[in-house]
Length: 162
Image (cartoon, rainbow, N blue to C red; front, side, top):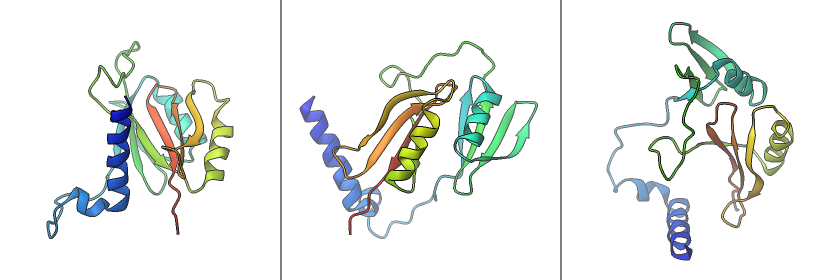
């Protein structure tokens, strides 16, 4: 287990110290840009939409009643929520399922992370996997939740050293 931890830490340090050269070779131009949008399948479209709108300040910018789906945006990120056809879904298990492990959303400060935690810790349907804690020993800080449909969301503040 300690060897896996050390490998993970080495990977993280390499990405933080030199993310551009780590991802692509020198003079190689990427064929893709940033994230356009993220689509999540949810158990209950209205409850999950309500969470993103009321707790995370996203706005509903459209919908497709036939699918059904809601299209959300917070000015920085577009998210599509798709209603599952089956009321009894299988929860994601990182060791047994292929798929999105979690969505990581950045927050602006340590204080914003703590305010967010205080805001959502009593919301019905939210599971707090862990409250705000240091990320790999710090100085960054993060927390992990499951939104009402069970999708894992990490909120992270990456401390910028001067």
